[in-house]
Length: 198
Image (cartoon, rainbow, N blue to C red; front, side):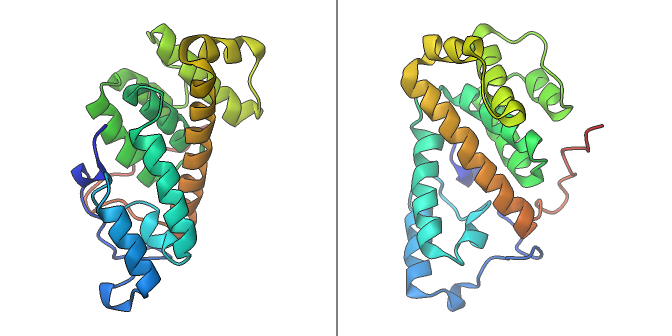
């Protein structure tokens, strides 16, 4: 799966919890930054500059995220589909921006992402895509999944896949909350990707 190093750097010019200048980092914050930047993410982006205000949260959070991004039992394009569903449900502009790029690189059809951005069920999904979309959409909107939806994911991805899909969805809800509360800006010149839904 692509690393975050393929994303443009945040400009750090705005937001409620902007990046902490290097000279102002505590030793604990610096250790967490080094752990994140030396791993597969390759950079300190998204929610992590804000999360550094609580270094232990940032460290634990990034370790879970590293598994969910780079080692999940769910194939990369489907994992990114789950993340896009979460970003849309939370209207998390930066999350959508970053993970749309990663979803396209992982091979998710653009038409599926476009439909999710518009708040509608995508046409032309294969069985795996439909299972993931349905599972994640039901979790977000109904706060549970039907037996049929559960079975579709379990039968295709096993019980580990069920847990990995729940975890990636929950993790990216917390990412979306952090990005939205911290008002993490899009990179300069990037248009707002998600429009309000009716």
